[in-house]
Image (spheres, rainbow, N blue to C red):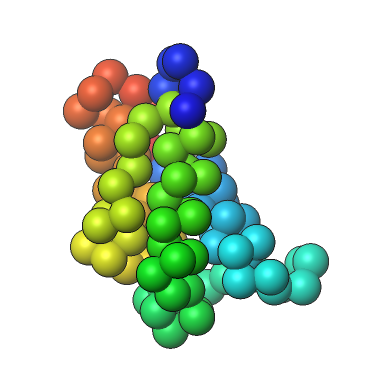
Length: 94
């Protein structure tokens, strides 16, 4: 994790989440992850959830509990939640 939280817009956060999910699923380069498809429908398993949550924590400089990927189970929903969390903690505007 970085020492200072990284301020990203909701759109930038969604792109980051989508890239990390695509990498975890070993999708071919250029294949996009649909932002409204549930992570489980994309094929992300519990090990993948743990990996993506850890990578998001490192990239954003804030703790991203794995539960958030179940509670906000699409790229779009998770990005909205992360943007809202950043706003309430003084981070980026969404």
